[in-house]
Length: 279
Image 1 (spheres, helix red, strand yellow):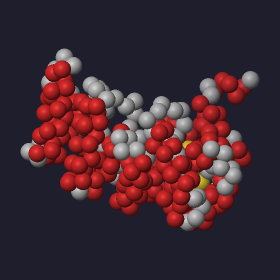
Image 2 (tube, one colour; image 1 turned 120 degrees about the vertical axis):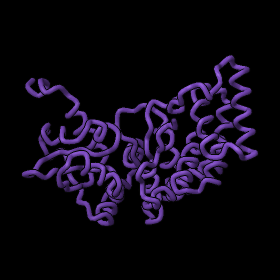
Image 3 (cartoon, helix red, strand yellow; image 1 turned 90 degrees about the vertical axis):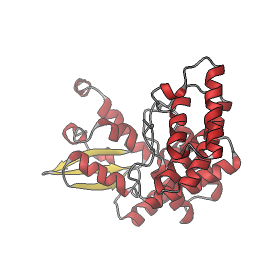
C-alpha cells in the first residue's frame, strides 16, 4: 500500500513547473525532504521511472540519516514497487532493513505504510505553476519567485488553518505588488476579481462544497444563482481543481478570483457558529 500521491489528476504542465521549482530548491538544499519527495512523486506521475527512482533512493537515504522510523515503511514499500532489483534500490532497501533492526523495529515489510509521518497530503503543484507563471510574466522577480516557492514548500509541511497558496505567502510577506498581480491574473485567466466583503455569508452556498475545499484547497462557494454556484478561487489557473469542484457539487459553477485577505475573512465568518450572528 503506497501513501497517496501529491499530483493526482494534475495536468502535466503543472507537474513540470513543480519539477523546475523543486529542482531549484534541491540545488540550494540537497537534503530537503519535501523537495525530494515531491520530485519522486512528480517523475513517477509523468512516467519517468528512472528519475523517480533516483529521487526515491535519495529520499530513502535522507530518511535513514534522520532515523525517521515513521517514514520507513512507505519508502520501503515504494522502493520495492519502483525497482527492487536495481543495484541502487537494493542497497537502499538493505540499509532500511539494517536500520530497522538496529532500532529494534519490526521489519518494514511487516508494517502497513503510513503517510510518511505527515498530518496531511497537500498537492502544491498548482501553486508552483502559479509562481512560475508570475515569474515568466515579470510580475515577481527571480528572488521573489524563489521566496514564494520556498515558503509554499515549507507551509506544505505544517498544519495551518488556511489553504496553502501563493497569494497567502504574498500577503504574509506584505508584497506591495498584490493589486498588480491580481489584475494580471484576472486578465490572463479571464476570471473577474470578486470582493467577498460585498456579500453576506450564504451558508447554503458555502455548504455546497465539502469543508476541505474551503479550509484546505482554496475554493469558497459564496452564492447561488438558481441552480448555479458562484465560487471564489485563490488560483485561477488550476483547471483540474475546477473540474474537481464541479464534480463535488454536481452543478454548473462560475469562478472568480479573490485575494487572500478577503478569502480568510469570509472563511472566518463561515467558521463561526450560526448563533454567533444573532449577537
